[in-house]
Length: 250
Image (cartoon, rainbow, N blue to C red; front, top):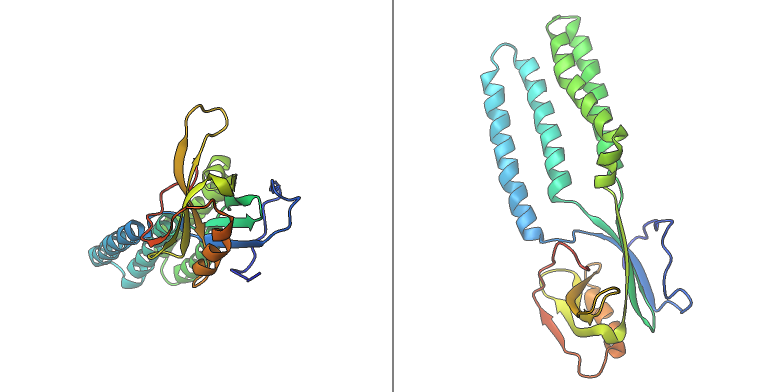
């Protein structure tokens, strides 16, 4: 009906439960499915610590300003990239709305971009150190410490099965319209929040939680208006601040 974001490639194992029904609306999006205020505050605090540490490290190495500068840049780059990968992770989402309900898939791919960055960083700095070693043999030590360390980090990330499993996720959930008890348009995020009350398979009690539907900028009102007619009569429709939890479904 309206294009919400550039389509992502869906996971091959995904099978929509309501695939037999026409799709009223469907889209894919990459979003930060957690409290971004806390994550951003943590990022800037840690970034300041990394910056100060890099400056102090550079000033403590007085032997060779070029050698010291290269090592400092390597330290700053690797640690900063690691920090960003922790505080600014994004999850892939695919949503599908039909007359029966809403279902979504969320998955996280392994960050191949980080491997590419580390590989190029190790290669470029290694060439630089080897070239500088023709002028001063002491740069060979730098080639072992700097690019060598980056190379080992790349190998451990690229070929560690456990590391890849930690950074890869897949979940698929579906809900019927009569399971929702409140519809809200978030005032602080591009999110449509649906509170639900269901008895999960294998449980004998009711689970109450929220489904956060992540939307493209300025599209959440349209999504909410499409959903509203399918909800049970009397379900509240509000605008409110939404705190995105660490998990959007049990």
